[in-house]
Length: 171
Image 1: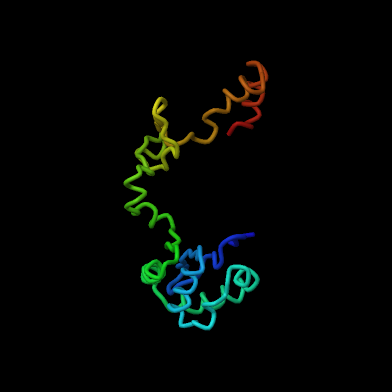
Image 2: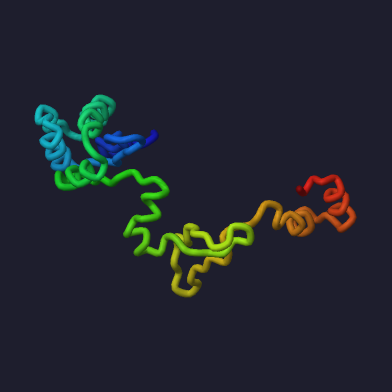
């Protein structure tokens, strides 16, 4: 279904001005849709109920894209939200790293990596009261756990592991 939704229309991601700049949009009810139509200058579409919007979703996507392409991403988000649509900018990595809400939620944490040193990684999603989350490291290096896997998971003995290492299959 991609970005489509059986119960919300329009519901998608639309291009804005600039290279690879997008806005996500959802009109969750008829009132938000009618208000969006006013913003788009397409009052002729305002009376469409959900069923008609679902059937015409591609044409509506085209009409919305025509408007969003003329807008700066953050300006489009502000206008869409002001008109009752659920909207947010589609964020790349740099946007996420500077997002105040993600910072407030502690989404990114600093961890040590044996090769790269201090680095920032995404933190745990769940926060449980009796088992608080902890990031122990930034991720393994290539092959860091190979011997453990060969021995503990696959059940290989020292002779077999030595044979694999001598064949340079662990490099």
